[in-house]
Image: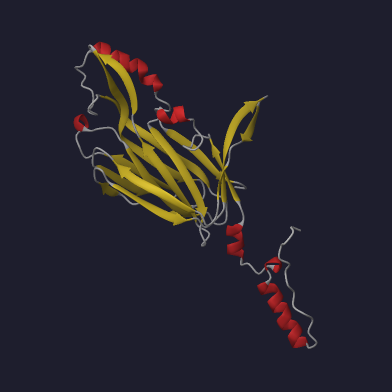
Length: 292
């Protein structure tokens, strides 16, 4: 028992049978040690552990890997008072700068994507709500804040095979407290964008595109907040999240797609340096609530 901890109080013994019944009612409703907390509330108060594999959320990769990434993702799961699960995602797209000599001068060229697809798919359950499609104007920026309902630990999981058996190791978990306020930002630079969404029951897919012609598009440079909400019928949540950049292109110092008529030597130099990009194919992670 911790020093200074409050002791639970119990009703005094009553002489009449009616008083004893009333005392028992108070004992079971007022005292949390006797089941006074409702089942849904107690269920949300307990700590939940979510396993993430591979551990490639924005939180866990190195600063160098973030600098060399075109697509990044972070996410926060939460269990609502209704028992539904909500997953908020922070998705970021950016370019990777490549310094290269063009003629007699050094200039920064870029590798980036002109569009992208983001998908959330669950193994068992139905997704009932999600971020809807919208048009996003150039230099657009907004943010939302929401208070967490449950305590969650997001733990990275490394899977490897040893002696013919698959083993798992975890390290560097992130703890998200109930009652904590989380902030999510949405911002876009350089061009208007169109966000389209389609729900497939157990999956939601978004497309992020530019209305401009490909030859005039700049690269994606934005923060995106997306969410899904679903019910898993009392089972632990499990599924996958993928962020796939598409239309990867070289861009000139003015953020315009590099013309194919450019010097073949320059194109060859840029092509060799494309290996500098970390995860050019994007990010795919699996999530699993402990016990599912």
